[in-house]
Image 1: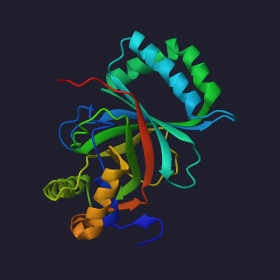
Image 2: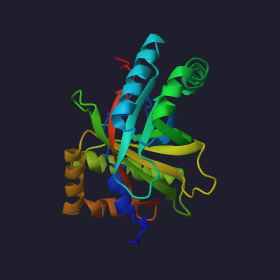
Image 3: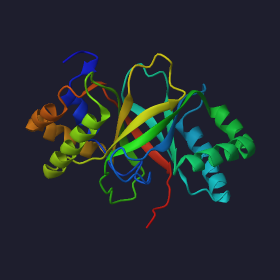
Length: 260
C-alpha cells in the first residue's frame, strides 16, 4: 500500500461508511441517476472564538430560516478528527432539494441575510466555498434515533485508466449487495466538483460516507479487518484510486422534513 494513494480495498472501506444522518433527504432514487447540489465551506475561528460562538450565531440563523419558511435546505457542522494539514478548523456542509432551491436560497441569503453574514464573519473566516453535485450510491441505513451527532468520511477518488463510470456503478452495485448480506452498514455518496475547487485538484469525485456514531465506524472496520476486505479487493481492484480518508465529527444543525 502506498503512503498517499490507497488500494481499492481501502477505498471500499470508506465507501461503505454511511447512514441517513446527513443526506437522507437528498431525494436521489437510483445510484448515480440524479444529482443534488451540496455546498461546503472551510472555515477558521478568529482569535478568541470557538464552537460555542458559532453555535450561538447558528441558532439565530436557524430562527431566520424558520421565519422565512425554508424547508428545502439542510446543514451540518463538521470538525476534523482523523485528519492532517487540512488548513481549517470547522466545515459547513449544506444541501438543497434541487438546483432551483439552490438558486432561490442563494438570492435570499445575499439579499436578506446581511446582518447574519456579519455575525458569522465575527466568529469565523471562510476562504473556501465549493459546490458539488451529489449522487447517492448506496441507500443509507435508518438512524432510528434523534441524535444530531454523527461521523463523516471524505476521500478523493479517481477512476482508473481504462475504466468508465458505468464500470464503477456496476462495482458499487455488487459491493452494496455484498455489504448488505454481511451486515456492513452504511450508505455512500459521490460528490462531483462543480464550482470553487482548486484548479490543480487531481481527483474525479469525493467518496463520502456518514454513520451515526463511532461505534458503527468501528464495527464496519472490524468486519473488514476480519476478512471482508478480500471481497472488496476483488470487486474494486483496478477500479478506483483513492487517497486516505479524512474523518469528521458532524453536528446536524438543520434538517429537511421527510417527504412522508
